Image (tube, rainbow, N blue to C red; front, side, top):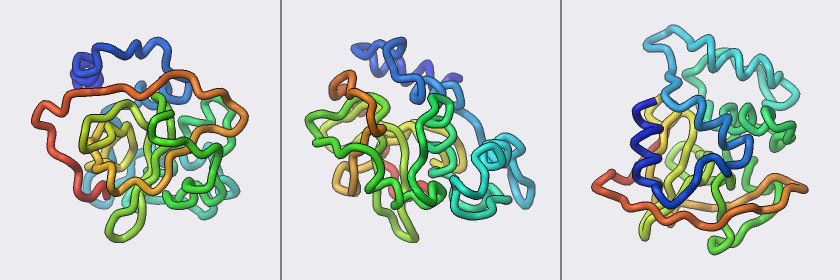
Length: 183
């Protein structure tokens, strides 16, 4: 919760009350963490169970398996939006929905990134000159807002059939480091 409040303060020009429902669902889960060690988070496994094998493309039974795609699919499902095929794979989101140009980004856009060992997917909440501010799961083993280099972004998408509402949000970096690997 503290992180959400801090981010709102950084993002003073954006009214989070106007966020799309799926982004509000994501913000409500800020701070959700993996269970330490061999244990599993019942919350994260509950998201996977609710989505099911057909949506995720696999049996998902451990939060040690990257879960950024599970998080995105779960939040979108809260607004009755279908997930990308094989939603557990971050890069499968690169062809989902409508393509957005960088100058058309709005809070709630789905951003896909390349990273060593796979990809990463999360929601756009803003940007600074060097990085997108991304609300996502499995960022440091938790739901957080991270700065991810724009140069790593391979796709900017919007839910199919939904109008893009909003515009890019400029946020000061304020010394927050850029994430190097979200796994």
